[in-house]
Amino acid sequence: MSRQENCEVVTHYVAVNLATAHPHIDADGTVYNLGTSYTTSLGPQLRIVKFLGGHLEQASIVASVPSRWKTGLPYFHSFAMTPNYWVFIEQPLVLFFKNLVLNYVTNNKLMDALKWMPEEHLYFHVIERSTGRSVPIKYTADSLIILHHINAWEEDGHLILDVTANDEGKYLTTFYFNNIEKEVTDASKVIVTSRIRRFVLPLSLPDETHKNVNLIKLENTRCSAVRTSKSSVHCTPTVLWNEGFELPRINYKKNGLPYRYVYGVSIGQDLTFEKLVKLEVNTGRAWLYSEKDCVVTEPIFVAAPDAVDEDDGVILSSLLRGNDPHYVALLVLDARDLTETARAEFRAEGQVTIPFHGQYISAHNLVHSY
Ligand SMILES: [Fe+2]
Image (cartoon, rainbow, N blue to C red; front, side, top):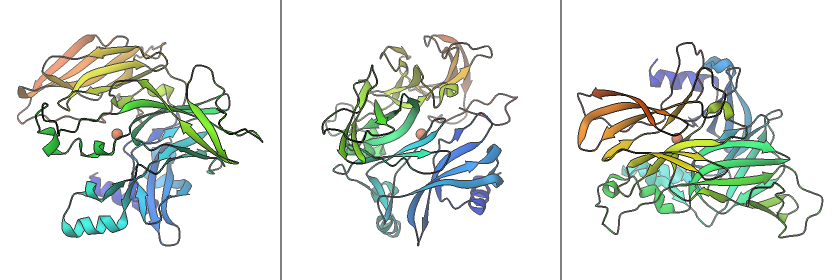
């Protein structure tokens, strides 16, 4: 089925114009995704779409929340799902419809239609899966640009959410060709990379709270959530690892649950993916893999058939050589310590480019997970 045919089928069954590249999948094969739609009566909406059994023809909208902006939609790339909640962050990076039309007419980049408003707050949407309704608490935080929701889970009346994020609007121009092509020594080169940040949200509020009291009662976290009105709290995250980190992947069996490890890439000064990283999220312990003059790609965790521990399995990643654009290898690393256990090497006819967001699908999987 072509991509075009696929789009027509989805929109035939459910009113969603865009959706993330990061759907979630329940153990029974039901797929959920976060999408957007626009109607003249309701305005821009953010919507959770459910695909029963993973089938397009079984698609239905199970939750809708209005966009904060009536003439635009916030950029979003992913969301999180726990056993009881869908969670996503609405960020002040907005695609205004007027700018979209103007850019189309003037043949400008789509990116130029996005407006970053760092003075605005993040809004957290926490939606009960049983009802499709939002938790009646307004959660805010200082502005960040968020690409990936890594994982979220519930713990003693709190919701814990890990994301990759950065706080510099110029991040958006990092991967423009004219920036990538600049020498590392060029002072105008934009080098901004994300950090892993953790938020903790209280799922209920006491009747009365003094201002400036941290509502987070969990041990082992320095995250805070401070009441700003009867039903509003402002959250402050912590940084889990003080180095650049993106393209996060986890053992998907831990999705929505407490987890120990996230795998990703760190980005070098030349803006290439220079290292694979395994991070123990609660301790900050990191394992690294790199090869001189090579570029790694998004790590994909594949559990061992008889896995017991969370990191029983392998990491799959591609390896490209900067000085040999026809070389590509499939790396197989031990997920415990990122040591290389195997590699399959290929020579491509054309130049190999960096892939991301690939999936491992075993032969017996009817619906693949992540
Ligand atoms: Fe992504």
